Length: 348
Ligand code: DOR
Ligand code: ZN
Figure 1 (spheres, rainbow, N blue to C red):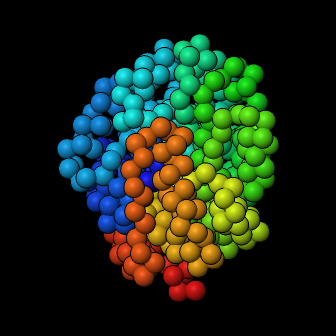
Figure 2: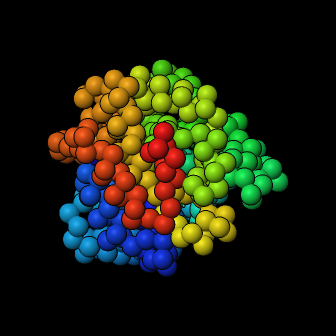
């Protein structure tokens, strides 16, 4: 399987996880290809850091096909340099990532002016590859509604409307600036955001979107159990949103599943960090999809085939663990981390 959205930490965040550990746990779950995200410490926003990351991942010798997204800033020179890096090192550098809001790290390009500059610069460079987007419109966030004792309030502080507006903004601004590449919308948490993407797709725009296991399996009710530390960006939503996203996966309306694997220490979680370990969730989601009637071709598409198509990767076989092994492999990989946001789900 391919997991095209992971945060493998290491470097100044070794205490959260090392590259070798993340890659080994992924492989133990049957994930043999990953795309790493650039909000590392230091960030993957310049050539030498990207080269060092590729070398470090290779030296782990774990046998997982490793790719990364280079990060975008609001500097035209930097953007041009990242475009050259994709051209030079593709598919190891598989595309570009823009945080259209702040999340973990400090990579948010939150002003429309900055976002327009990114798309304009990419157009001027003739970039036709993938830009992956984290969409939550900063001006619609309400941090004052967050209650530190109740993680379900995170969904009030970072509401659905912020995601939907950010998605529609990106579609509009990219078009206004003549962007010729492919927009990938990461980790949708709402069906309303999917509607925006489907509208654009029907008009011929090159777009894709993904759903995480946590947004398809858990709801903000689960976030109420503080010991699950089920806090992430974008947040868990209502049961209505969750079931609609799960149905969209089953109905073939989502391009792929991505874990958004984002481990932290318990100390950092207590201090409010967003993100949860993700590999075990992929296996639970496969299990649930199979139980709800997902066909083998649909699972193949969701767990790698469509990623291969969009990124023009070699059409390697997608191996999905046998149904009978999913639960135990999932539990075993969850045990590798300090908490398990799926603990109650396993008991249901
Ligand atoms: O919850 C999240 N955690 N969302 C992100 O966008 C980043 C991630 C992380 O790196 O911790
Ligand atoms: Zn992420």
